Length: 401
Ligand SMILES: C=C(OP(=O)(O)O)C(=O)O
Ligand SMILES: [Mg+2]
Image 1 (cartoon, rainbow, N blue to C red):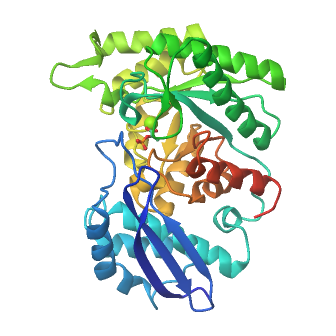
Image 2 (tube, helix red, strand yellow):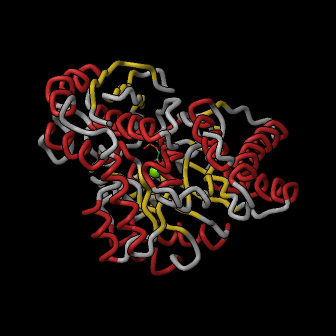
């Protein structure tokens, strides 16, 4: 019996030291699930709304909890998420906050899995899931909104596309991170780390690309499989809408020059993956780039699509991108996130399940990626809140969850 008996909400810390929402869901038969909301820094304009933690918890206690307790089955995810939407009553979760919504949605899924005695990925994806694993894209150098005085491009990613197993991919990314630390040291460049644990050195984007290419080549030679390079440009953060140009410090690029620049980088560095190469309103520029290099690389919309099926459908119709980033808190519920993956997959786009820059120990996204058979996952490389997901992937692969 998965009828929800209680829902508790509390403030806990996230990896940036900010508060976030944690939810506990208990069912009539004693099933239990706990989950916490992540939080973005380079958030998209069209994301669901994250409210201040206390405000979100108070609103969820008032509006959502009465619609869940004794009313809804934790094992029926569509029912849980429909109740959250009905309790909120807006399109963007601005009444109860996407932070409380996603925490309850994920906690209910875990409670449903607990009652079944099944791993979360099987409850969400079915019994035949668990044979394929996503390739983890590892953020190894970064800047943008995730670190000050570092690169303009937000994330430089190791992409272990040739790894024979998820475990070998995870360790390869950690080795690339370590190798970059050594290369920075050899060059006398002092570097701290950004919000996701990537190195945040005071170097320009071209130098960062050379460094990451060298480190991925070195580690690929050691491990004996291919490791590519990817980028999250997070171009909305570089775009000055007033002047209509992208600003990289003192340098400027027009929207057309931005597309040329990214196309050049794809060719020069044989990039395996590029996320948000243009700003979040530029479907045309995204489509132009997809025409030019979409047959050679993964072009993924994060701020462009915000895990929203309407925006994703527009991208599909206009040929903008060939992949979608899937962040459950961007849209507010697991059902909405799964809808985005399924729409993408039906139309030949790849799904990339993703963490946020502000994270917790919650490992739901590891299960979501396996449950939906997503080919890629972006969840950092080092740091406890990042390794929580990576280690969970290793456990899932070993059938040890
Ligand atoms: C993970 C990302 O950063 P944030 O969570 O700050 O949006 C991203 O842009 O892909
Ligand atoms: Mg992004």
